[in-house]
Amino acid sequence: MRVGRKVTMTRFGKAMLVGLDHTPEAGIKPYTAQVVEGIRRDTRLGRLRHRLFYNYAYNYIFWLRTRSNDPARLRKLSRIERLLREPLARIGRTPRAAEFHEIDFHFAEKMLDPALVDRMATAMFAPQTFTDPYLPGFEHRGAPEATDHPFLYMDAQRLFEDPAFLEICSNPDLIAFCRETLGPRAVLSWAWAWISQPTGFAYQNQNWHRDCAEPLNFIRVFVPLSPIETRADGPLEMIPRTSSLREFYEVRRFHDEDLEPLKQAMGAGVVLADKGDVYFVNTFALHRGTPPTHRRGMLSLLVSIGPSHRTPSIRKLKLRELPEHLRPLIAKNRSFFRHLVG
Image (cartoon, rainbow, N blue to C red; front, side):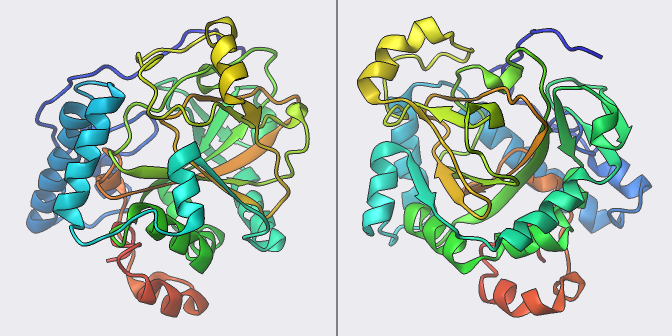
């Protein structure tokens, strides 16, 4: 199956009350479906908690955050959020955090054990059910090589329960950088694991854009699941120092020719990485994926202060459900895992 080039973008101002059968994104199971599948235990208190948290998180994103994409407004709201949530925090005090705030990017060489990255890749490339948030209704069951669909997303709850994923998220250096950059209230709010397949054209987020429906204070953490050595491997391309730019902030995809002078002025480039490298990106800066010429996988974490509209869909794990060797580290960083471990 070949998918056309239709581009979908977030619509702003969708404030509304949402129910238990509402899904924040294609491929994410709503509360009712999770109950039916035995992912969640249904109780009156559980329904009430989910309904309240989901409506708060949904409208935080689709009313407050996305009412305008103006960078000046978002910077002001971000400062207010930090004052309300962590009034005593002093972010960006380390050289690497200060640099991140300046250029929208930080690269950490060999932060993870390559064998751990291989375990995450094995879990993602195993036969399972894949979806595509850009194409509601799409579902592929089986091995990824059995379809030529451009993007295959791993089931979120399966990802959140994977031992390799939990070990990656509990890496002390990863958590430390997120806290240096966002403050002590930094928390894992969501994660994606996807497979990009060669298509011969740019699919959806492989066009220039800004992430427009993420929390006010956030970082995207990228973990390549195989080496990214050339453009053939489908690297991230970004234009640094553009998260605060008062140009090109419309909610749409941009063409190369639109941005060519800006790319030359700001020094656009692709991110190459070895297995075990991790990079941190403010994806409100202009960026895109590049189409690979072969199948490759990527893990990306959303770390933020406020929740994503997706966050309430995470079923919390009990500490006893976690791999025994990870329990002390996760317990020590309980605040970072407060949406994932209850």
